[in-house]
Length: 170
Image 1: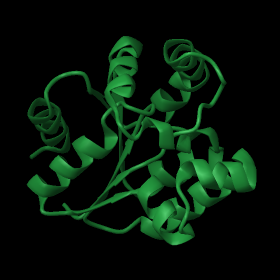
Image 2: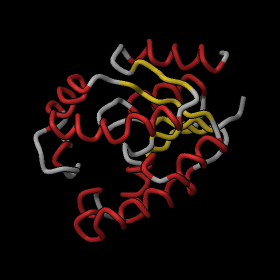
Image 3: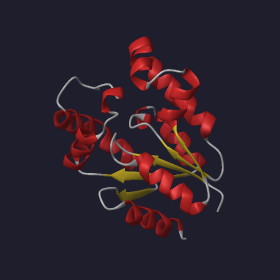
Image 4: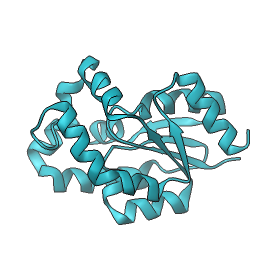
């Protein structure tokens, strides 16, 4: 198996953490599209949004997706990667897509505990829980539509990785 693996899900669903662990087990490269975008733009996500708006950010996000897609790579995508139809189709056509499903309450707790949360601009201007509920109402169907597989991202990392490996047939 030398496929590209995409991890999709809301912010704080564990895409980067799971992605690093899965890549390590598979001996694959790992890329986080937000980290890639920050490195290539020399700006944080918040700075990109402040300077270029959400439209500019989404454009850069799509460009990052294409730039990092490669065989034997696990890619943690930004939570909004699925908003563009072209991105959804691209991921499904170029690899295996795993949706990390996590209850809103768990994501809220993770965000509250995340020291980097200040670098993540609010999407709605609401409280964390309200924002997660609103964003998930908009994106849940898109995550399901895009995913080849759905993982329970609220269990320990090792169990999520095992779920993914089992689904991949390994």
